[in-house]
Length: 478
Image 1 (cartoon, helix red, strand yellow):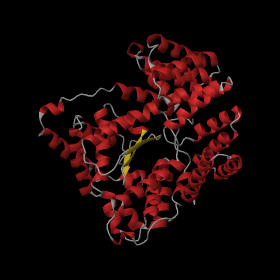
Image 2 (cartoon, rainbow, N blue to C red):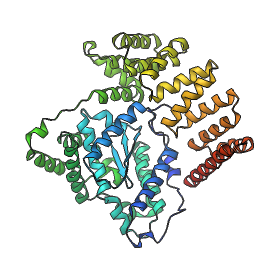
Image 3 (tube, one colour):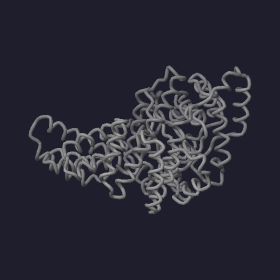
Image 4 (cartoon, rainbow, N blue to C red):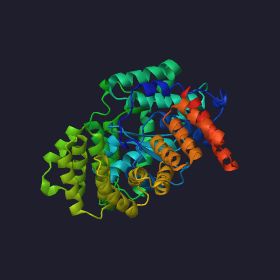
C-alpha cells in the first residue's frame, strides 16, 4: 500500500487529467435539464479521473473517521438526492470540495487546520449544500455545448491546477481549462455570492440538524482567511479560490447564530479521534523537520501516547532510529492496548527490519481492529516473507476489500498468490496493479497471461471484468 499521506504527484498528472475523451457523452444533452442520473454520471466520471491520476489517502483510520463526519452531516440534510461518497486527498491546502452526484473530497490540510469536529463538519455541510442546491449543475445547464465527460475533465483540471501546488501549477491548470473550454466556461464554474450565501444558509441548517455547534462554520472560514486561502495574489483557479464576500458571509453566519437557541452554542465535540488523525497527518505528511519542531516545542508533561507515536514516526523519517524506537516504546508503555499505538509501533518495527517484534504488534492490532487496512497490509507482507502464503493471501484480500483501488495492494496480493502457486490469481492482481497505477501496457501484459491461464467460467468472467476496467481506464487517459 502506498504511503497513505503522500503529496500529490507532479503537475503532469493535471495535464493528462484534462485530456478526458467525450465518449458516452451526448452533445445535445444540455438542450434540456440535467437529470439526477446525468449528475451521477458526471460525478462518477470525475471520481474515476481523480482516482486514476492521484494518490488518495488509503489509511482507513483516517478515511473512516471522515466518512463518519460526512454521514452525520448528511443526516441533517435528508432527504438527500444522492448517496454521498467521501474520500480524503493528501494535500496541505485548507480545502474541501463536493461535486454533482454527491462526491465529496476532504484535503488533509483542512483536517489538520481545524480545532474541533464542528469546524470540519461546517465546511462539509457548506460544500454538500452546493451539491444539494445544484449550483454547479445550474451553471452547466446554461452552457448547452458542454458534454458530461468534458465537464468532468474540466472540473478536474481546475481542481488539480491547485492540487499541483504553487502559483505555476495553478496558472497551468487554469490555462489548460481555458484553452480547452474557453473563458466563459471557466467563469461558469465560479460560485456567485448568491450561491455562497445559499450554501451557507442551507449548510448551517444541516449542521445544526446534525447536532453540531453552528459556530463551527464561521470559525473555519476565519481559519481560512487567517491562512490567506482566498488571497487573490495566489492566482488559484476561480472554482476553488474565489469565495465571494467571505468576511461578509462570516458576519451573516454570526448574525444567524446569535438568534439561535443558546443550547445550540453549548454543544461540545468529542475531538479524540480528530486529534489522533491529526497526529498521523502531521507526522507522515508535514515536512519532517517542521513536524519534529512541533513536538519538541510541546511540553513532555502534555504528551499523550499518540504524541510519542507522532514524534516516533517523524524521527524514523529522519533516520534517527534509536530515538524513534524510544518514543514508540514509551507510547506502548502508556497505552499497550491502544490499537492505533500498537499498529504504528508494528509498522515502525517492520520498516526497521525487526520482523519478530513487528509481527506480534501487527497481529495484536489486527485483532483489536479487524478493519484496519494498514495493520493487515503490513502483517500480510510479513507473513509472505515467512512463506505463510495462505495467511498472507487471506489478510491481503481483506485489505483489497477495504481499499479496492490501491495499486500497491493489488501488486503485493498478486506476488503473494503467484509465489503460492496461484499463477492465474497472481497475474490477475498484477494486471489490476497496472490498471490503478495507470501503467496500462503492464496491465494488458498481465491480462493476456491471466486469459491464457483461465480455465473455469468464473476465471473467464474475472478476466472479462478486468478487460472492461482496462478499457474504461484507457478512455479516461486519452
